[in-house]
Length: 100
Image 1 (cartoon, rainbow, N blue to C red):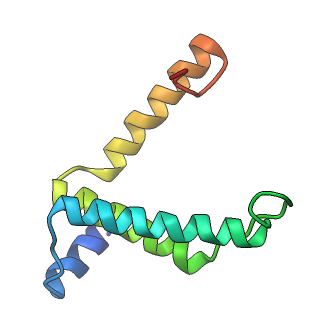
Image 2 (tube, rainbow, N blue to C red):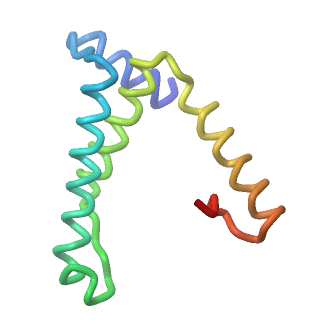
Image 3 (cartoon, rainbow, N blue to C red):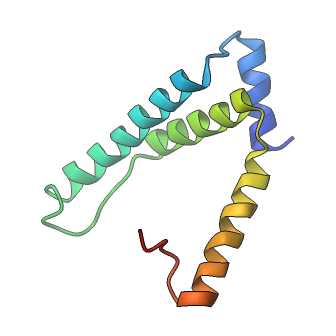
C-alpha cells in the first residue's frame, strides 16, 4: 500500500476527514514547526547546522498526503509533474527556480 493510501485508510478508520481549507491550515502549521526547528537550531539563521525533528517532518508529510486525499489528487502523479517541470526548467535555463 502506498503512503497516500495508508493516510486515506487512517482518515477513514478514525473519521478524521476535514475540508481541504482545514488541511491547508494544518499543513501551514506543521511547516511552521519545521521553520521553528531551523530557527532554534541556527540561532535564527546566524549559524549553520539546521536541525529538523523527524516527528515534525512526518506530521507535515501526513498533512500533505491528507490534503491530497481530501482533494482526490494522486500525490505520486502530482510529484511526477513537479519533477518534470523542474527538469524542464533546468534544461531550459540551468536553474530549477521559476524566476518569479
